[in-house]
Image (cartoon, rainbow, N blue to C red; front, side):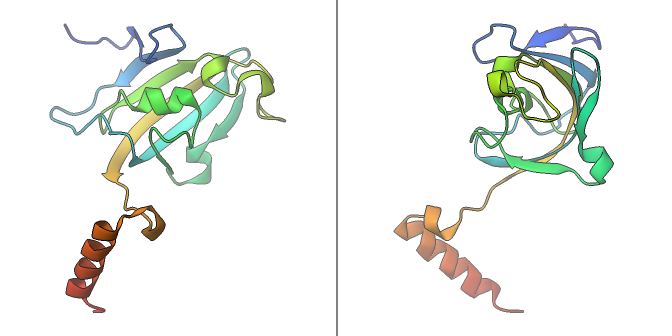
Length: 154
């Protein structure tokens, strides 16, 4: 059975309805995804308050996509779990309850406490994130040094 444009899918890991996804554009056939934890995700989004529809943020307004490392707590839980259900090229609306967003503290001045959020999102791509030197073990550092040496300085 295919997912229709109006079907709501619970994508929260707890399956408690805290993150509901409605696919607005399916990913192309064979598109890569979903992105694994630790990968760098590139996405476009527009965020609005569910209560009144007022826009509080948009990567489109800045003219460049947003990047984050998925599954590492760099973004709200609603994003970590919502984007983990997507494929490249897919667009969706994520309706995120406050506890998966900014919770009781909100994000003043634009997001009030306990605000439910709506994000129109698009997964543009994802790539394995290169580890920083301090994140590598000895073997990984040696391998990276050999690769850099082989690449040369151009």
